[in-house]
Image (tube, rainbow, N blue to C red; front, top):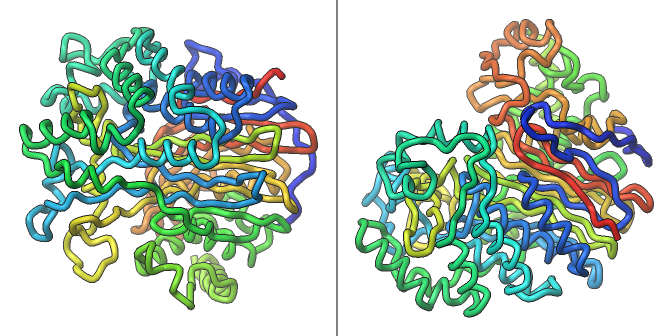
Length: 537
């Protein structure tokens, strides 16, 4: 791989996916930068940076805001993972914010098909604990201060976008069957039209109480009592004793890898940083033109590397508390990657939902934050007294193999596909990047990194056509945006083809910020409702 360019051009872009509104998809600033999956959350992050907050403050404020204006993807009822570079101490920290299976989740008491939606699908939410811990430990502002913009957003509401309407229509048959209809459908049965102002006054009051009483109220106070009652009334598994074991995040050492001459740090288990590093290690044994996804042959190579890395992840699952003790970590081993590259070369010759934000500040702090309620609209049920959707992370456990580290059992943590990542040039962060999209996360990030190494600007690399290969050899791609030879080349090697629309929601949503000299660049993926921006001073 070649050295990333020192300078990149930037472009101001009007949304191709949202013709009704022009969003600032790419931005430049001298004073910091934030990119999130919703423009209102980006505005809130910019405000925090302009008023003296650091990158951690801005990330936490924007994360709370995303739980308001992107409710199908995240919220208080979910889990949050963070990668932080804390400039004053020069620490690189992976915050493992895994949620926990309730103590009443006894093996053989549930089947995976029973926990797709509803109250039994919910693990103990960790997002309030993670955001509070990050703020207290590495931020500079109070919880009350960073919650204020989210309170205002929940009270005043936000305009429903075409994407929000599409997701609501897709899940409407499930939302109509539950109390979520009161919160996200009009007249409890219709998907809100584009431009409709969606207000969430109950959630605003929950945020106010968090600001007054602190996050412990969510786990040991009146809010915990509300969650307990709600679960008992509706057959859920979470009780006060589950909540009282507050799921504070665990500080873990990030996984390290190479991106050409740059150093890359990403999420350890239960996250999917191992998959990202293995893909980059394998690709480093090819010439750049051989894995270029913009060519037919390169797309075939990339798809095969993508598939192999996911096979390895499935075959080598690790409990996050056991992983640091493993001496032979083959997925990270460069010699193992060389052998896989040789096998891949020979084969080629033979013919939910989640959200992400990235932030840098002028003082050198950097945050990559990925959070989720698992599938779109999570468990599709709402705590009516508190106004947030519960997650459905019980669906992410293994239910048949007792030896699997993510086998469903009391207190277990679920699989996670997230890979928030920070890339360094020398001692300074150069790029902060991440994506939602479940198993599409690591290939989405990798394709952006490949194109940055080719000399693309940050926005060009994110906007470019995207593909993903599943474990069973099914390639999903934005078919109309690839060359005419790409699909036949994939089919000749035996891949099944899943043609997706241009700028497909399915293929991730990369948010990234980059520092080049004195300038910060930001880019938000046009596949969703995001925006990028930086402080004016």
